[in-house]
Image (cartoon, rainbow, N blue to C red; front, side, top):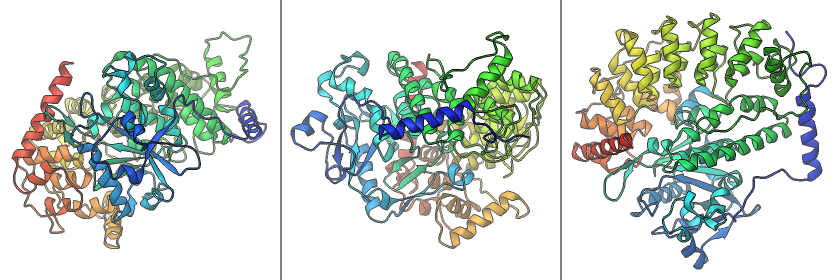
Amino acid sequence: MSCCGRGPSTPLEHFAMMLNMQNRKRGDEETMKMSYPMYTVAAEVLLKMDRLRPHERLMEQGMLVEFKKGMGNAAFVSHQWVGGEHPDPEFKQFQVLQEALRRTLTDLKVIELDIYTESFVPSAKSLPTNKLWSEALFVWYDYFSCPQLEHNGTHYTDINQTSDLALAIESIPAYITKCAFFFVLCPTIENADSSKLFTPVTWAQRGWCRMERACRELSMEASWIMIKSSGWFELIGSPLGSFAFGGPAGEGQFSVEEDRQKLGPVMVHLLKHKLHSLLKAKDLVGYRLLLNTQMTHLGGFKVDVVDDVVPCFEPDPDSKPDSLSVIVSRFFYQNGFKGVNDVDRAGWSPLHYAALNGNPQLIQGLLEQRADLNCKTHKDQPIIGMHGHASALVISLFFKQNKVVRLLLEARAIMDGGLHPPIYCAARASNSEGVRLLCEASCNIHARDLYDVSGFEAAAMNGARTSMDVLAAAGALESANMGNVLFWSQVFRGGQREMVQHLLDLRADVNYQYGWPSLRTTFGQFVALNTLKYRLGNRTRNPRRCFHGVEGTPLMMAVIAGEYEGAAALIAAGADINIRNGRGVTAGDLAQGLAVPDFLAEGLLGRRAECERILSISLAGSLVETKL
């Protein structure tokens, strides 16, 4: 087996070297285009605000600061507008941001990693809050950073494209690249007339919010901070952590369809910029991963992928332009491989990157050149959240490249066994079509991963209702402990009203108490280790969940995980708030210091009416969106 990078340099390495030399000669790195100044508010000014006023009013009062390099750090705030013509008429959402920032100045020392990143990316680190304040902090927030009054309530796509507002919107990717921090402000709140509930899930559904998140993840600093309440922060430290927060921007919800099409070219530009930046930094692994996951970012946009980063590819003159041999040769050229058996320093072969790419012709061409159908990666890949020992089938399932999945199954790829079985990975990725293909191929639908989690449980943990339905139809309910499924759904991202109700309809016990896992199992050892960490003073998410999960209830897990809508649904369904876990505490005890929403605080005191009211708002909003 050859090792990619040894021997003569590839065209990719030559091109990367050329870009690096040009960058040094120019003396500064290429930046994103900024068509309008980046106006911000100093953090100390923001903390004193008692209402939100538009850009023009703050400009008149001299409260806006044009942020430039060397002034300190900037933070971008992504959020949903709670009102039609005003982002936060009652100042509920913004007040959460203020209280959260104040807490980072006082008792909060560290912003903890999300549970996915903490569990699967051991090298990832939490964020000490003193880094937020190590330099002067300036905050970008659309309502006071972009001109507002000139458009008089018209949608962004209706405004003159040379207006200051249009220029500011065009500059958002550039603003984000200049920011050291990226906040997602998504507390669970209702709007002024109590007609809609805003949650982290509704934020993740919006196309513009997804676009802002994508801009951050395609910048050189990809992590971001989610704020669910003034006492509940989460550092999304890897793409694996953000996986549950919506798909591509192009598949998000847009009030005006024209927005979706206008953002496609912007996303292509972002991808090209990031690809060049990775090559300048000589990060060939990062470049390959991004080059081959473009459809993860471009889904829903009517644009072509970037497939000619390295110039001057010359196919074999004796081959047809669309032949499999030319497709494979172009792939090798753009990815810096010399042959089908190359393995790069990340432990990935061409077939693994091709599985990300999603082109079945490319896969077919590699197989014809005798690529090992079932070869597995040598290492995990935290950049994209993929565990180690993954086959091409697992990778294509996780990234929903189902044309490739179909081809690999037809080629008789192994679909059972391993530390993370394909059915588990497809369910965890909410890939219902991939789950269906595996079921049709007669895979073992009851297979469990290293931590004894089934595909059905993985789907529930990620709020993947459609995948759950496919598995249920195939017989997965026969081996499912529904109380256990309900419990785990609240630990991760399944804490929505619909998921709770669905599992209760399947006869899950709302007061189910999770038992003590056996120390003979890998998961039992994982729980024991994290329990010990908790006793020794480590109070991050995994140790806290493991310690309090013993004889804990779904409601307790929802409170710890910040799944406030799920917690309200459990209380409304009759969850007993007086149950104590194996550590002698109740769900209400666990909520102390987390600044849970008022409706949940009421519910944890036995007053269920507020939880029931919030759920009715959530249901009404879902019905309206379904009709739209």
